[in-house]
Length: 69
Image 1 (cartoon, rainbow, N blue to C red):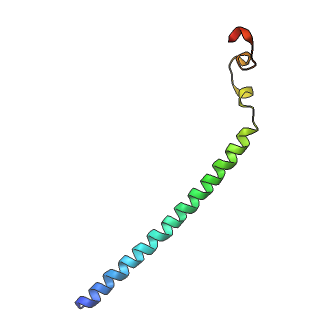
Image 2 (cartoon, one colour):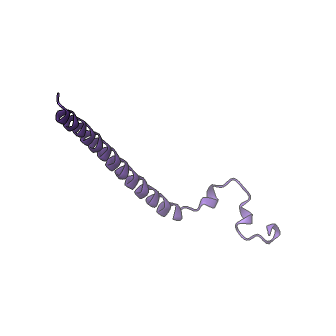
């Protein structure tokens, strides 16, 4: 194998590695978009849930009971 053939082979290998990396990065970007959308939906849902009802502490503090202020 001559020098030119060796260089061409190395270039082909690098191109394949870059193509693999590009595919991996595109998958990671898509995964990130899915995660972002999930978190946005979760935040929207949380707005409608009264979290205080699920806490195991004295709720009168949050009801404005004057003796706990």
